[in-house]
Picture (spheres, rainbow, N blue to C red):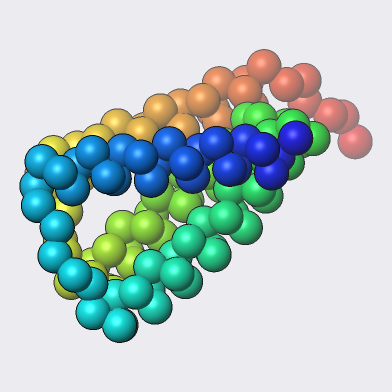
Length: 117
């Protein structure tokens, strides 16, 4: 079920965050940062549940486009909310994923027969 998948994913991400904080160090977040983290967790939970449900019930080639737009929104929020501009390697990865998504959508469109009116 989608809630189990979302819970396992969240647990794995939390564990990885704990491991990374042991390597990089940890400082106590301010109340504003806690509020932003709680809001981000709530939005990501809803988004992940919707994503899993869409993939299970819908056309994957269509839903992949929306999964890629989530990355764009995350980048905008990273810049606006956290005032953190991604580095060149991140932008290269974003471009690679965007090109792969567009390529997959074009490939799927070519495979579908054209409906005659």
